[in-house]
Every structure is written in C-alpha cells, then in structure tokens.
Amino acid sequence: MKFTKMQGIGNDYVYLDAVSEPAIERRSGLPELARAISDRHTGVGSDGLILICRPVEVARGSPYAPSIRMRMFNADGSESEMCGNGLRCVAKFAHDRLGINANPMFIQTGRGNLSVSYELDASGKLSAATVDMGEPILDPVAIPVDLSRLQRSDREHEYRVDAAGQAFNAVFVSMGNPHAVVFTEPVTGSRSPIDPEQLMRFGPAIERHEAFPRRTNVHFATVLSPVEVTMSTWERGAGATLACGTGACAVLVAGVIMERLNRSATLHLPGGDLKVRWDQPSNHVFMTGPATYVFDGIWPD
Image (cartoon, rainbow, N blue to C red; front, side, top):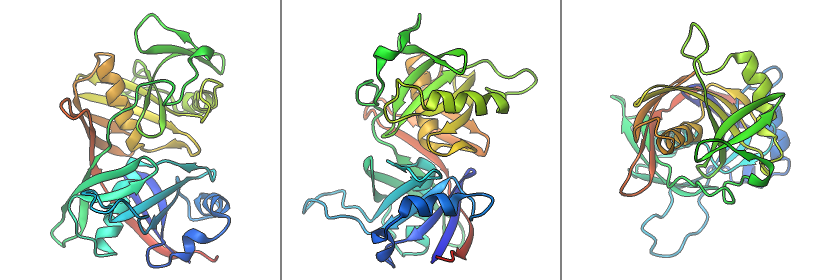
C-alpha cells in the first residue's frame, strides 16, 4: 500500500490516497492500521494516520462544494474530528498530486467544510496555507466539559483541574475538538512553558480527567507579549507532539478571552511557528503555516 509522509511544523502524519484507491477507506481495521503505521520503532513513525478521500455528497447548489475529504486517526487508533496542521498537508497533496487547483479549497472534515487558501512556491507546489478554522466553541457542554467535576477559579473562564497531585487553572475551548489551555510562567532559563518531564506526567493525567468525557488535548502556554506566546502540547491520543494547529488556535482564543493576547499573534511551538488570527467581525479563527513532504513509501499491507 502506497503512502506519503508529510509534516506541518513537525506535526507529522502518514497519508493514504483513498481518492485514487477508494477501497482503502472501506477496509476493516483502520484503527489497528493507524497504531501499526504510526509506531516510531516498528512502523513508519508519525502522530497518526490521515486518509485523503473523495467528498461525500453535499446539497445541490452549495457555494462551498468540497474538493476533498479528510479522515484522521491518532497514533493510538482513535479517530478525531480534524487536525489543523494535517489539513494544510491534505490541501498540499490535493493540489500537488491530485491536480485540484481551487483556491480557496474546501475540505470536508469532522468539523464540517473548512476553507483553505494557499501560496505556491517557484515550482508551482503548495508551500503554505491559511485555514479558516471556523468559530471557536466556548460552551462547556458543547466542548464537552463536565463542570460539575471541577472547581471554578478566581478568574472568569478558568477552572481548577486536579491532576497527578497538582492543581492547574485551565481555560476550555473547542475548535471542533476539545482543548484545555493552562497559562504558566516560563521554565527557568528558557522560554518553554513546561519541563518535558512534567509534560509527560501532567499531560496524560489532564487528558483523561473525569471532567472530559471525550478526553481533551492539553496545552501549556507562556505569554511573552500580547502578540507572542510559546506553547507545549500533549495531544489526545498521540501524546507529546511538536505542534498542534487546532491547539494553537485554542491557545490564542483562550489568551484573548483572558485578556492576555491580542486577536492576532505568533505561536511558537517546538516544531516551528504558526500565525493565528481571531477575526472579530466573523468570529472565525484563521491559522497560517507551512506544509512539507517528508517521503513516499510502501507499507507491506
């Protein structure tokens, strides 16, 4: 089975072309395949598996007819709604390999149809893209978060999460998938918001806290200025990753409602930088970043 590995600022996935080979999506055992192919010791190695599929039928005459559809599986085999970094790579594959030239390009995801505008390099290949991530969801029931299992902090929008023997004040945002954002002071001697060993300890404990019925992505963030923030991520179903696009959007939104960040900022992630803007008139969040090929290969299916 042919595959392509791509990455967006270090958030790496294995991509399967189910447009050219629709039988890939119909096969049984996709969660098991995701776990096997994502293993960094015995597989290809990735944060998960993404299928690039033909779009399902939409209402006739819709101005947002999708060009392509994305299905995403985390490294643990669980299926998620979408991934911002992965979405840019899906657009790259659709443009560069499948000849889809619509700009903006509409892509079906578990979050709905999302618009991707993109830039081309000198060779005509997609090099960077801006994703309209839609409106953030702040209603705890819709995220979802069970607030009855948490205590409200002294500040509006923050709640106390007790995990692994420590209390954290977190802000909750959904970008189609759930996120918990914890603002911290930087680690002594660096701009990092949390020590890697602490991320490995507290990340999974918060992810699986009883207040999150569908688990949650976890982000520790340090605000450097109103337009600049560093963050470290523990992704639901994938663990510590170099980047999370929906997480960067959630951090910006949390920073704005906590009056820590402007509506447009640069997010520094371990794998690179993302530009995120929360547009006030439309209430939509826009994320800009690169999309890069790593290699092609054949999985011995």
